[in-house]
Image (cartoon, rainbow, N blue to C red; front, side):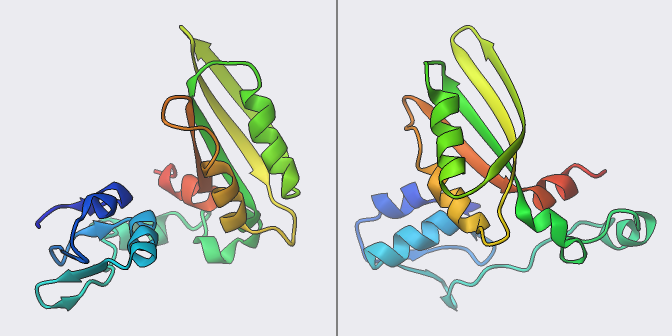
Length: 168
């Protein structure tokens, strides 16, 4: 099957034990995990699928020299302990409490919250600092399982990714 992305939903729908994708197909981490758990093999016409080299765009080299005040993430360890959490969904009592309780449960600290409710739907953005022994992956798995498609959805992004996405 030729497609640009392969998601966990695509893997769940697959009836056979194998999915054949194009060499340039992006397979989400959730799809890889779902495939591993379900015993589904993801491959290309020439063999096992492997993650393609990222395309950093035509201006990547120039940007590295023109933006020295914005170091690459590995040069700034303070960014690896922060996360941006977004939540979107139908408004109801206790959503903020549910999310912040989960953050507190792993020892995280909320630095900033921005929330807006429009016609019964909310959008919330939180900046979270992880404890030194904390794990970004733990925060992500803990928060992204909250809510459901009929209620609300939570997404967690490492602050360094967020910052570098918005630096231009």
